[in-house]
Length: 411
Image (cartoon, rainbow, N blue to C red; front, side, top):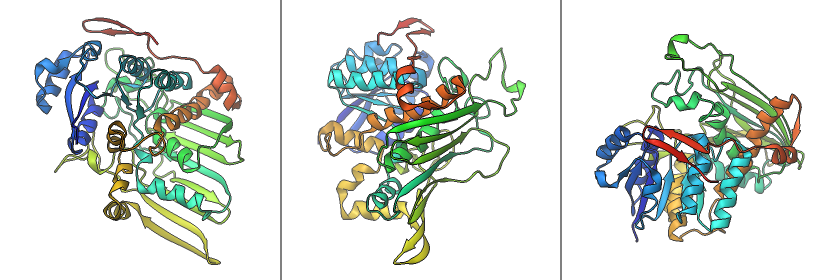
């Protein structure tokens, strides 16, 4: 097996999750890293045993190398488009952290660049790489739920705004120019993408949405003139051209204990999606430790309610345990249980465009749905998917101030 040599751009917290997974995938090795903060990238290099000569503050210098097989982009939301485009234009396959972008227009720029350059592209959406998602999708395809007519996408924290209540995360999460949006573009991407994928990627018809930033903000957590610029709650109702409706609820903070879970309802049955994976699965957990940033790996589970053989029934499907058995019976299925395992298999050619999960398309359509919430709020009316495609604007950064100079982006 040829060793895949990876370079990482952005050595913040999320890169540590990626590094944990890379270390658990045989035949892959991160050999170079870059961050605009020299002290940060040096500390990161020491942590992972990467020599200083393979550490960079300007990612464009790293892209001049000819000994890397792919680039892992771990920068923040509004830098995904400029950096991913630069990576692919430099001749490298690109694996991009979620969200694909903060606007549909910027997501489409990345998607179109992959097509134009012929470079392989993937977007990190851990929620679609596990048995919970695959089995839910299979149940719908086999008609076990009957006619699908409504679904709900839910994400809730009692209080957990990254970069604010959660200081282990970068302050960039709450800055408008870099983070852009709050929970819907953070954890909400996992829930929305999973829903779209399970339901067969229905085409968006209309959306009505609103967002708020009204949860209490302790001024002592905003030192040195820092402001909280993003939402802490987004809600919406979407209708698709096949008639299915989807209500959307995503918060970072709400004075409420429980708000329910994601589900899909059909004429003959419904499924509840419990403990959706938003952290990267088992491979993202360091041996003997906890996931970087806190928390434990989720244990995705399905609960079914409906009719079987004319009898009303309910049952729980333990997806994690069944996934392990599935991989034992058919080792190839392990390629579908983790983002980065899937990406590595695609890079090697073990998966091709007909057998891989098309995360770039799923991520772009997810960006269309999330962007529609904000376009609807701005216009104070419902909007169509076609309107959002036409009205969405590129808001990604074209210029980035760094401690050592300015980076000009061309995309």
